[in-house]
Image (tube, rainbow, N blue to C red; front, top):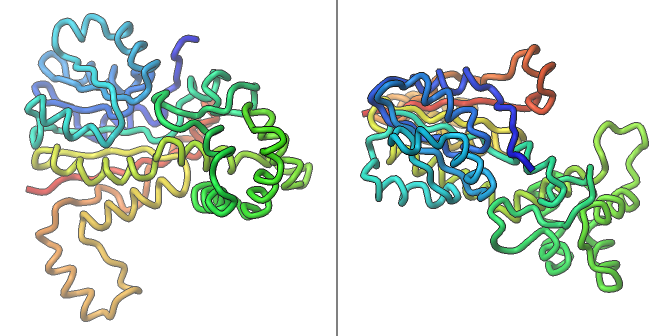
Length: 318
């Protein structure tokens, strides 16, 4: 299957990190190469881009698409999760020298559309969901975790209100017939949840989201990325992150606020808030816009999967 992906908020994200010739930029989720290609174009002739991705299929695609750029040294390709980014960039001698970092969080279209990857219940496939192909699969989690842990995963990572009911039913059923395929699990969750037939979302949507996030440790990887990015960036360097659901955006928002030293006045007495705000003039970063950038109506019409995307940008201080 070809690794085809329509890049979301392409221009807004790339322009947001202010690409310039002679500088180095990182695309942490290079995937299909959309952001990478525009970064290379806008940093010509002497800019350099490091393309990073944990998906081996994406890396294989990037090697083919950017064969010339890899040969002439303008592009460096690295395979791994966010938690390995800092080490990889340090080994390249780029720590503290990067002008911009881009990340597009979550699952990509090729991962969803390829039934063999097991991310979606739209087409039946093995219950896998591993972006890297390593570690425990979704089937291992569903068939091996306790009822309590499954309920926690579904509730905390999928915000599934019927998490306990679904977890209890899975544990009662899996001994007789283990859950090995996506459609099998999706149909089972639907029968247990009994959502209204007029619901726009499939009853298993949140369960599948939760399993994917858990299997790939996505929220922990995201928090690591935000933390490590400040060490990788040079002064006035920028970090731009696109998220697609509330859990991701919440982490990004809170981590950005922490790095920017912001506190909500309603949580503090006014006198204390004023003192903290004065002290925070020496914080590590600045939030570029108070609210996230959303895709235009035209983009959503052209690419419906972009509808929930949110872009937030942070700039490092001296």
